[in-house]
Image (tube, rainbow, N blue to C red):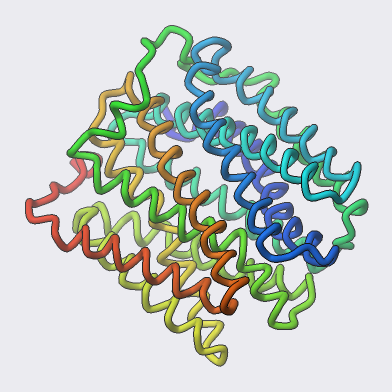
Length: 381
């Protein structure tokens, strides 16, 4: 049987449509608020509210999947995301946008846990790596498409909301007539919190936290940084597309190298590249290579750290482990933009890259202190 069966292809097709919408909104929401002259700290809080929603959605996902299964959980999440997005058109008000982005964050987290858990449960120990690679490729492709769309369409709020919401509804269609195997309702309920305490998965969990700080700051505040540098909304989309395209380019070779040389060595190299790319961004003349290096290393941290942790649990615990990993990622995504936005407001925009370099250095120290050997993943056996 092919790894990429019809339900898997349909699931990833729906994810692609959703991810385009997520990418467009993640870039334009801070820009829309900036155009309304909201202070940087309020823009940062709106970004953090989205990630707070991710946190809540991650905790709710396991119970939802257990109760109604993967398909209905996915459909509910898409509709909830669409409703929250339409709410942005009612008024540009700090409080209402805080709430709408919080609900949107819940919906997105539900989608991610549903998709990741469904793929991991459907795959075997020999095919999960391929499924995870396909998942990350589709996710980042959707992100790039969303960024590139910004250069060819109007970026006004009321011009964007109709077609973005339509994409969210379209994402429901592929799974209306395709059922994901292993709906999850028959699986035993496994609590999330013990997953966070597994000693053998600790570096993977920590890696997801660091990845959340890095990517949350880049997604939430890089558009604002570029806007403050004088770039138009369309140009901001181009630069963000370059950043994420580098992440796509890095997925396959990083995954192959991790299989060949082990997760520990590759994570060390990735984190070192994040530090170099961040310091390089402090020199405006080197933006192209610096952004490419940041994207290639930063956007591949999460799948490598995630695959490390998922190797440690049996099949029936994968939903709980995916929740724990996404929870870890979300904590980083929540702390990163809020802390960085305050420092950018108080000092300068360049603190965005200072913070990214600092947390990457902290994780590098953890990785260098790992004394015992980390085995080559069993997926290569």
